Length: 150
Image (cartoon, rainbow, N blue to C red):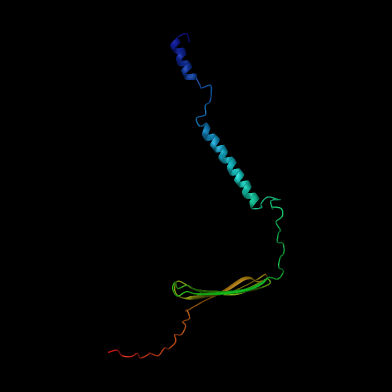
């Protein structure tokens, strides 16, 4: 390589940069801050949800009472002439046994009634009945004769 031209070509062909430059240093800092923020938020959420042991705040009483024989009964009925909404439900619980039924007028105009029971031995069982919507009888009103205006 005594020729300067050959030497220059050799140097250009084999040259590599000696320093590695980062073209986005601010982006790396932003990503690091985002990661730290997400980790902090996850830790706070875990503490708030009491997922970590000892996360229950001091001085807050815990309700540990369990009713050994829960009992309740409820019922409701909706008959909305404006929207056409028609449904009802009733349910009774005595210990581990639940019995109830609900009715709803389906889109095709039929009445669907579901009778259900649930207990630890038989599990959940439901019987579905379909039929026409019962029509309440209209009261018979005698026509009233009004005075003739002439």
